[in-house]
Length: 66
Image (cartoon, rainbow, N blue to C red):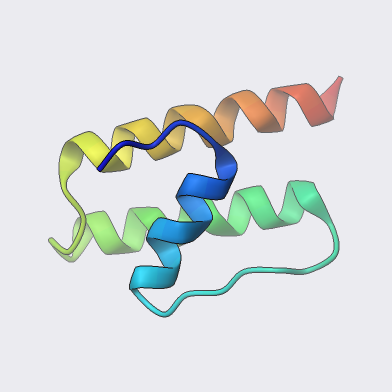
C-alpha cells in the first residue's frame, strides 16, 4: 500500500473497521499508533506498512508538540 499521509493511515485503519476520532488530533495520532501496533502484532498488517504509518504519525506528533 502507498502510505504518504495521515489520511492514508486513517484509510488503512478503516480497512480493519477501526475509526479513531476524539476531536483532539494528538490523542488521535497516539491512538492510531496503538491500533497499528496491535494489528502488526496480530500479523494483520505488513511490516513495511506498519513502519510507514508509524513514521508519518511520529512526524505529525512532533509538529503538534512544538
